[in-house]
Length: 280
Image 1 (cartoon, rainbow, N blue to C red):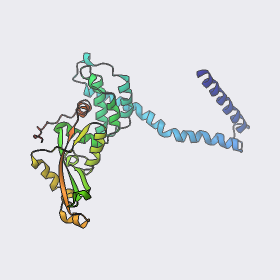
Image 2 (cartoon, rainbow, N blue to C red; image 1 turned 45 degrees about the vertical axis):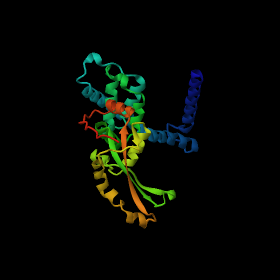
Image 3 (tube, rainbow, N blue to C red; image 1 turned 60 degrees about the vertical axis):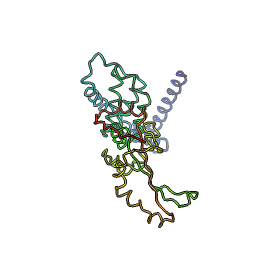
Image 4 (cartoon, rainbow, N blue to C red; image 1 turned 120 degrees about the vertical axis):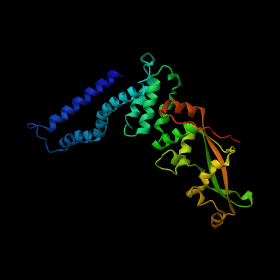
């Protein structure tokens, strides 16, 4: 196969040389004909198309150097004898992806922690190959959401439905899994909690437990007082929309064992773990 590829490449080179001779017949000046136009435009078009990639390649060298500095910082307290070469199937994609997000502290730091832990013989066995792809599918806000979950393990959520008195007629979900975690975690989009939970559940980091709720109902009060939720939490609004009443359901969302391991490896910020209230 390599022989055939080499032969094809040589044929292409010969063809380009032949076109060039025809196009630049007199002293290197382009001949005004379609072939000459093609020879003149094609290299410029290719150069323009590859310019962003060339810029990324040049920037990538700088990003690798910056990554080394991050790793030195992460591993500065680790005894040198514990530092080992990372597994290639983890380190190579992590190095590639970190070069795309050097301007975002949250995601960059997660990749750096992953790389540092993959080089530490004490904890490297806890580095799952799937962690690289998981970070790739997280937004900066979701990284902040996870930091909060790492500290609290379980959070309260509430949902709002408009229903008929006749339960057989069903109802409609108005707000699902409302949470104030994005605001508490410093997220940019404070009312996107439901979408963040959806993605983190999809990735196996969180799990819903809709049949469970905190015994301490005061944990739900800040959620119910939030203006976005309280504005629609009334029977009059339900009736204006053709229903008989609105109902509020209290739930919890929990960090999974896999999610906790991910946080231990990929999140470096240590937060005070607040003891969770007893759960029903």
